[in-house]
Amino acid sequence: MKAELITRFKDVTSEGGVIELVVWRVPQPVPPCTHHFKYRAAFAMKGVRIVGFDNERGKGDHCHVDGRERDYAFVSVEQLVEDFIAAVDAARRGQ
Image 1: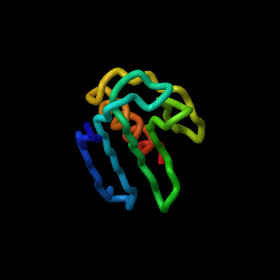
Image 2 (image 1 turned 180 degrees about the vertical axis):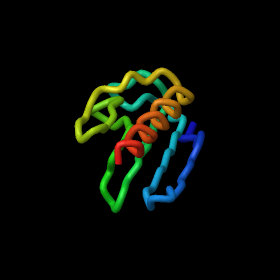
Image 3 (image 1 turned 45 degrees about the vertical axis):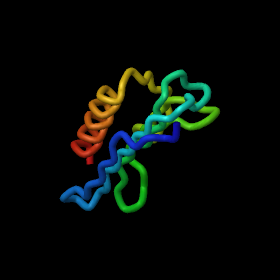
Image 4 (image 1 turned 120 degrees about the horizontal axis):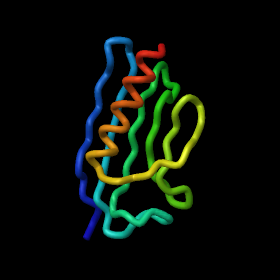
């Protein structure tokens, strides 16, 4: 089984920010994750990442918010989308 694209979304906000989310279903978990998804989600302004959620080999699920990297408890793709949207909304209100 190859990686299967689950969703891909990209939008430019009225302020000129870029919001992008990509999720794949993968045949094997990305260590140390135990789920079968590889994802990246980012909100950037003028080329600077403001919010990011991703899972990478060796780091696992984590997010970047308020200039800090934190562990992220991945539950489902649906919850990831909700958490990412909430973090982007909060960041946009703060700008």
